[in-house]
Image (cartoon, rainbow over all chains, first blue to last red; front, side, top):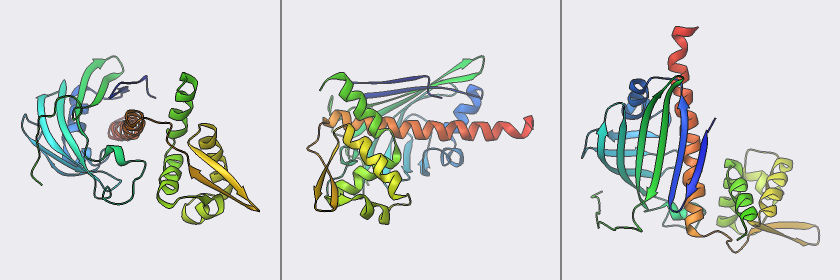
Length: 136
Length: 112
């Protein structure tokens, strides 16, 4: 069950209590073979500051970016951009997602039941355009 | 847009099948429920129900021409920001459900 659903401004936030320790949850969000079970096929994932992340999502688009901060068992922050192979075609419902740079933060907190995971994703392309164009 | 309408839009787009229908209608233009049923792995009845929900939220409109009733996307009541939040939020709901499933499966062997 989702405990909190909040979507304010250009930001989406989800909280979920997971039946595993923060160490196990950290493993599940940073180990390529495990990430493949919930996020998409991992092409590269180096969970260290500056490490590259490339994931092919189930809809065929690719999420590509870099890890900004990693505190094992506590917090993982990354920035990614969706590279959508379909976006050159006709406009579709998903079009606003293509090309948008976002910051994603995973926060892990131990609870009696396991781990409270909070995920926030916010757009950063509209705020401060750092002008980063990742090489493809 | 009044708050009630915003809720209706979020609810309508929270379902993956309805998002699929929106995608089809935006790609193909006005389409009947039967035509959609030929392309999607769900029954015409289920499609009609989902289309009614989308119509109720103002996302699609229907038009009857003789015996043919077609559906099309309405001029968007959504801002781009809402689009983004609905779609990204729905993605995280799916991902976190899958993550929870993964962690439950990994725990089970020792419990069972």
